[in-house]
Image (cartoon, rainbow, N blue to C red):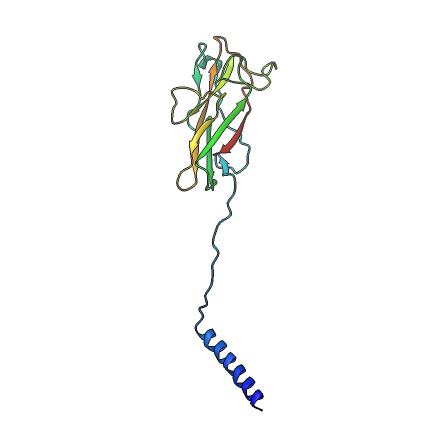
Length: 186
């Protein structure tokens, strides 16, 4: 009987100690926070989220180009190319913009017209592209251009395209061109 009583006392003490230790423990919650972000910016060109954009260049008479090197266009909405990059990667500081186009022979800044050998294409005309923050010279399209990502993870890149005559005798026709772009980050 003594043995049963000792065991009962022993188990009662264990339960009491367990209750006592349970009363002195702390409990709480652990909250996990974080964010998963896109590895690229959300890109809009002239207000459209399509990756492709059609830029209206305007319509001009051949007389607007009296000599080689005459630059025409870029007024109002003509030639405006506005990249609005938002939700850029939080771990990146810079956006790199590479414009890729067929260039006039020997040039690093004059974009050649599409179908330039077609009889329906204007002759002796090319396109300059400028950064609107520096209209003093067209962009060199052989290099990649670098723009900072701001504190709100945005980048605005405003470009302007203008026609430039490459000879004294400009001939009428379609004056369209295609420029591809590549956006990268670091």
